[in-house]
Length: 80
Image (cartoon, rainbow, N blue to C red):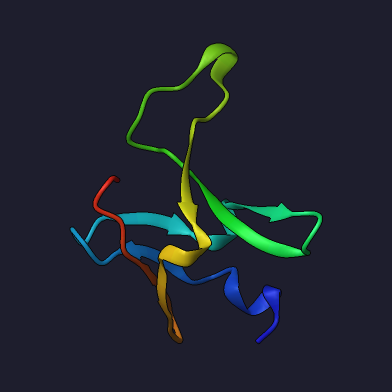
């Protein structure tokens, strides 16, 4: 699977069913020394805007991803 194939997938928390937008709206956080994805940074639309209107982000650790399906990415986190 290519990174471009992931963009339209909805991000959903398995723990509580909350939706966190599409991966195309998110950022990826990389470990430069190992070349691995550390986390997905998802815009926090439910929180308040920070200074000068910039968005806050929720950090979803890559190891919390449980399944990448055809239309959805499921992660599990009780903290969010």
